[in-house]
Image (cartoon, rainbow, N blue to C red; front, top):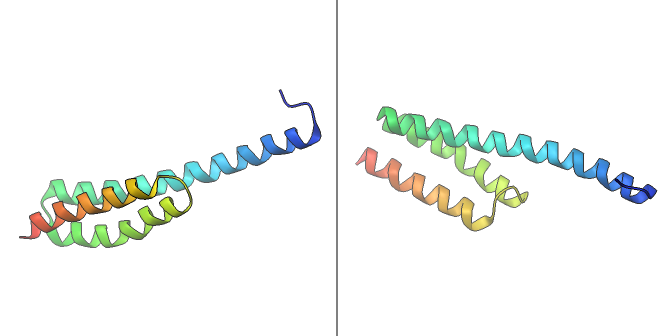
Length: 88
């Protein structure tokens, strides 16, 4: 348990950041799920549209430190490959 004033303040700050990060991670996963659902449904145009919406959200999560930059790039790349294959 925190004893000093600064340590108590840090625990409050960490709790706030954790909530914000949880919301951002959830938002990113929602966008990913929409792309996945469109891909499994076989709807190419909907999947491409969902990917266009998901890409900035994934990269924003990487910028904010929710996921690593390379992880975000890998997710976007793999989704793009699958969407392209579906539309081909």
